[in-house]
Length: 330
Image 1 (spheres, helix red, strand yellow):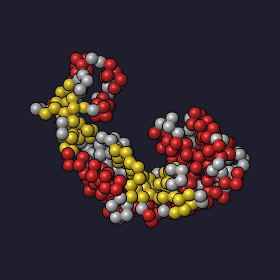
Image 2 (cartoon, one colour):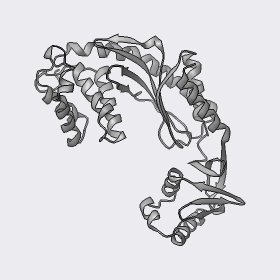
Image 3 (cartoon, rainbow, N blue to C red):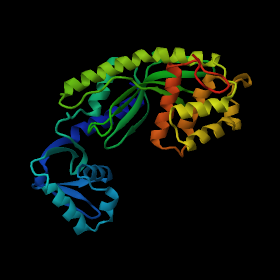
Image 4 (tube, rainbow, N blue to C red):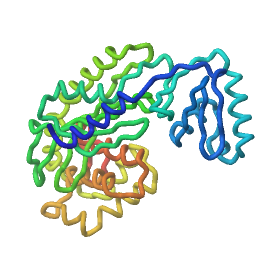
């Protein structure tokens, strides 16, 4: 088994074993404010970290910035008053020992990230490899590869795989995206599954894991098409590269700041050195978007995600464009 995969599974399995789902009526909770915030339920006390405090603020419609400005007595008065007003409202929290990891609506099933990764491992087989991953109290994000999808594309080895985003508290919507990764420049392309809704409310754990299998299968089926599209990009020449950048940005409603970052990056010696035969193509445009998404540390995570998705869509859904202005040609 891949070392990184083994490490991830070990962390997830331990967290799953130590996680308990605790159901409660808001009227039975008591909030303790101050530097070490906590919730008490009967004789049990659970500490609130920054993420779980953020969530309880959102659930109770209390601006977190305001809550943090209040002193301990005022915090406790506000939170306890609002929780008492929700008498009869059931909710649940995911706890690890004496701390709250996250909160979960009663209508949603608890499906651990460990079970999700295990399900994907069943589909991929023993050759599954995990790239970089992010794991916090609410969200797991990782990319999985298999040698089956490794190819050389134009000037770089490229790996095909799936990027999965999962939250066992459903704090973010689950995602299963076909993914290409250029090894030489560490750029990635994302192709989200379109027109498919992952259903959670009222579902069982088994229902959810069946959907995981379905979505992973569909994402795997998209990878060859992404490779084909990626190869075809080099044949689509661009006469006015700057105009094309701006056109794509406008079509995708990117902020002016990001448009300028893309344009400025396109004329740097580092990026210009990647242009083959000094002729710009759609291949270079896709690489520009993924390069900025992967390497510009000033961008928000949402903007990085958007740039990766735009690159993926340009690869899968190519349209004939004017090489000078970037407009679509019928």
